[in-house]
Length: 297
Ligand code: ATP
Ligand code: PLP
Ligand code: MG
Ligand code: NA
Ligand code: MG
Image (cartoon, rainbow, N blue to C red; front, side, top):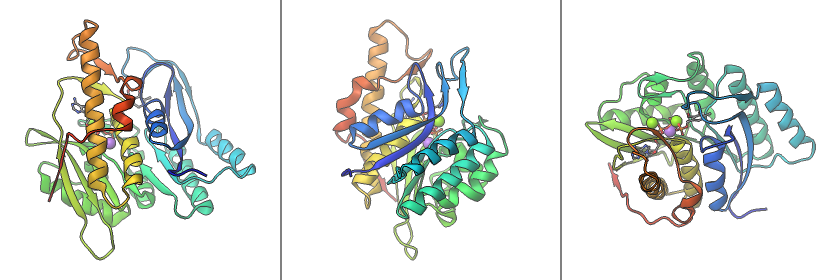
C-alpha cells in the first residue's frame, strides 16, 4: 500500500538523456509514487540527435508483461500513464491494458498524453489519429495534448483562447473529465489552458496560465509536464488549477536551471536542443514555489 499511488508508465526509454520514462519516472518517485515503467522502446538517445539505435517493443511483448504481472496478482494500479506510441497495434494493446487494469481497479485513472506531433508536424503514422479519437479519448481520465494535437483530435483550429476552450468542451463530451492543453501559441503568447468538468450537469471550470517563453528548444518537457500534472492533480484532485500552477512552476524552475547550466558550460542554449537538468532540479520538483499563476475564465 502507498499513500499516493502506484503508476504503470508505458513510455520510451533512452539510455542517455531525458524523454519518456526517463523524464517521467524520477519526478513521480520524488512526489511519492511507486512507479512501474514499461519501456515501449529502448533507444540509445532521443530521436532529435543525428542518429539513434535500439529496440521497439511490440503489442504482443507488452501484453506478455501484463500477463506476467497478472499471474502474480500484481496488476493493482491507481494510475496508467502513456506517452508517445508509435503504432496502431501497440495502441490497441494499450487499450486492452486499460480494460484489464480497470477490471482490477475500477477507479483507475488513465492519464494520456496523446502524442501525435507538434508545430504542424505529425510524428506518428496518420492511422493513429482516428484510434485516439474513437477509442483512446473516450477512456482517458486526463488528456494532455498540445495545440496541434487538440486540432487533430477535434478537427477545430485553435487560433484564439475561445477556440481552446471550445475544443476542451468537445474533448470533455467525448470522455475525459480533465483536459490540459499543455502548450499553445495564441496571439504571440505561450499558454497552458486547463479545463475540469467536475460534474455532468455543470460547465467545466476553465483557466489559463501564461508561460514565459525561454529562447531555447527542449526535449522531454512534454513528458515531464504530463507526469507532473498526474502527480499534482492526485494531491489536489478537485483543484486542477492549483495542480497546473505547481507543475508549470516547477518545470519553469527546471528549465531556468537547464539554460544556466548550459551557459556556464560555454554552450549557446538558443542554438541546440537541450537535455533537461532533471536530477539537479529535484528540490524544485519536490517543493515548487508557485511563480506562474492561473487566471480563471
Ligand atoms: P506533447 O508532449 O503532447 O507534444 P507539448 O508540445 O506541450 O506536449 P512541450 O512543447 O515540450 O510539449 O511543452 C511542455 C511544457 O514545457 C510547456 O507547457 C512549457 O511549460 C514547457 N516548455 C517547453 N519549452 C519551453 C520554452 N522554450 N520556454 C518555456 N517553457 C517551455
Ligand atoms: N520519446 C522519444 C523516444 C523521443 O525521441 C522524443 C523526442 O525526441 C520524445 C519522446 C519527445 O519528448 P517531448 O515531447 O516530451 O519533448
Ligand atoms: Mg510543444
Ligand atoms: Na502535451
Ligand atoms: Mg511531446
